[in-house]
Length: 440
Ligand SMILES: *Cc1c(COP(=O)(O)O)cnc(C)c1O
Image (cartoon, rainbow, N blue to C red):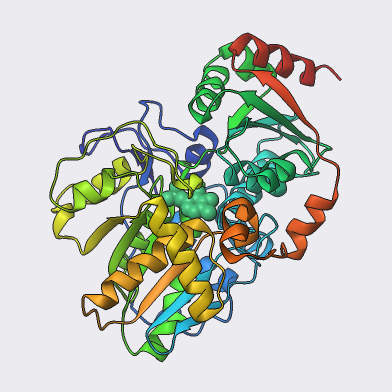
């Protein structure tokens, strides 16, 4: 499989990259996002006999790895990185199931992608005989940083530098981000998430720094994060299809459209998925577009579901590319925007009626389910549950009027001391810190 850029014209003699190059570069040289030249096709029941996620992923991703330096490593990559619990829990008998994606080390779905990317990068590093320590620089609004840190923690040949915005992540997220130590360096930036992203971009574009620290990014637009996410939808709907007799509609809480695009691609590759329903917070860009309006990217607004505070989803460019010959608004994709007050009410109602605690992101999906059922939807639904509620304790605990136990892996991190260093939202300050890291 070759990879091209979303921004390059569709001509036969265009420059293409293999998967290893696409992973190393992150972003295409013309500033576009990497996309596979085509999508492989599968039959709806191709994965029904796969016993676990690593086996589904190995079969599903083989075409994407074909002819790359990592082709022979795919089995090992999937076994090592995707061996996380993946429960499908019934929410409404025979009608709705939750795909719990939060049983990894940092209790959010981003663990799957971060671990997969780390497993790929470690193997690429071995093949390229890199000697210098590579520095993975990541700007985070909360969950990405922790997932990347956990995936690279104590991995020889890598260090991770995390930039998170002061006061914009939950207390537990902040503690977790600073609790790794060893090869993980955490900075609490005196600014917002946009400042963190700008600083990371400036460093990556700074030729001298990028060279001396072997800088690389693990941001959410890497193709290496999109691919493994396709596999958990494939695995879950294959298992459900027998129980639900046919295809299911899938509701995905969405910010940058990474997780949701993976679901759309799983469907377009032949898996038994009907409609893909995007559940956003109060950021209205996708709701407007899929309700027939223009696509209008804008700055994100802050909400309770803060991992989805995105006004201009970066993966929209990829989605549009995949649908370049078709009308995206006729593609059985819909979007609903949910405001903070409704998120609060949904967390309370679901707790009272079903004794299920939801994180604010997953609450958006459950609210969308309720609206669809009210308007007469009959088909079975699968909902992506993106984070454990204990990770968003400041929102969830007061609503439930009780404490929520963090899952064991998160509890273990929270029990460790946490050291984030303050950093001015200023490139010179970051440059000095980075240079200091490189001096042993
Ligand atoms: C990152 C994140 C999202 C949004 O995922 P996208 O791929 O950006 O759409 C949703 N929920 C949680 C808990 C997250 O951490």
